[in-house]
Length: 243
Image (cartoon, rainbow, N blue to C red; front, side, top):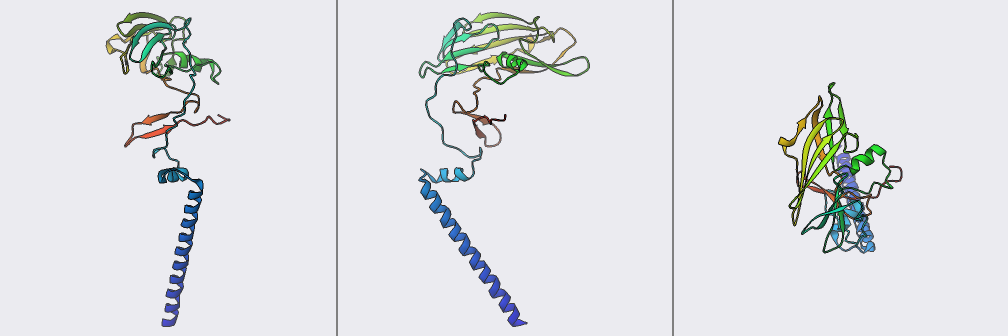
């Protein structure tokens, strides 16, 4: 019996040694593989094998071309700040400006032409503001500036921006959209005192400039910041062909 136990112990030790030896050889093989890639830092070695957005990736610093332009027939000059010359489209309340240092053109929405979007989604993308509301039966609907021909916009220019009085034709909801451009930021304000529900529809939510900074896939390098916990950066990726 004692001899059998000794045999079992020796067998287990032998298996453990073999496993450790195999693991060490495997690690050495991985090290050689990593060296062959001639990567710059050990951190990049890690992200090659575990590309999670919870870990910092190298920034893509390549120079990109402007994907937007400022058509003088569509965008009218509004004001100038440290951001550059600001131009406003009075039909959909979108704006564009050119960074004076880099000449890069920022836009509050995407260029919808050529995008795989339905007519309704193109209208939502163009619209600076979209509202959701409840009807009399508590059903939820969404309305853009182009949903109804009864929608009206009255624009008043301010010192560094504009104040737009908006009446949504379908929901019969009124509100003011006040946009102010400073030297370093863009301030958007919808005073609660300006919101009026003139019909039976009840306001549910408001989306303002939801396409600001949006790009088509990864044609312009960038990321989204997720303010959760310690935070995370979600890098732009190519759009799958079947999307």
